[in-house]
Image (cartoon, rainbow, N blue to C red):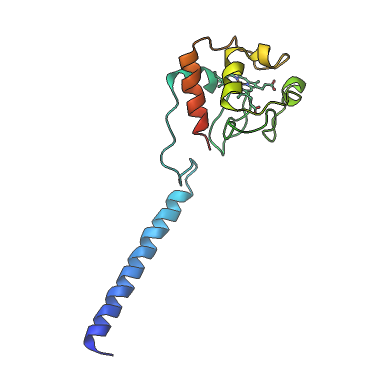
Length: 139
Ligand code: HEC
């Protein structure tokens, strides 16, 4: 082995060690509770404050008064594991696409008669739109 090669080898080992240290730090961060592999979660719009009282949104959080809403867009209604839905919600046959969410948030009892989500409904379409756009980021 020439001196030049020995030097290159030492440099490569150094680089490898450095990358191990860097990735070990990355792993440390990955163990943190809030979805660390994703860029910082989108901040909820002000209108979501109403929902927050009853709904968690991070993947690892438990259900609250209402089911956790992580991944709700595209999911069949009444199917979040571990949550005791009303028979009305379980039997609703809804899949939560944008238009359905919009109708439900405007008038929960109108879209799912017998639901136990007891809010009067969000009358402001722009606010519903902001809320639904936020829900879409929860995946
Ligand atoms: C007072 C508590 C409360 C508030 C406030 C509330 N919810 Fe709910 N929500 C519930 C409950 C309870 C259910 C379960 C309904 C059922 O089983 O009939 C529910 C169900 C839902 C579902 C269906 C979830 C699924 O897994 O099928 C969605 C979507 C939802 N809420 C969105 C919202 C949004 C968005 C807001 C804010 C505008 C909101 N909720 C405000 C209590 C609440």
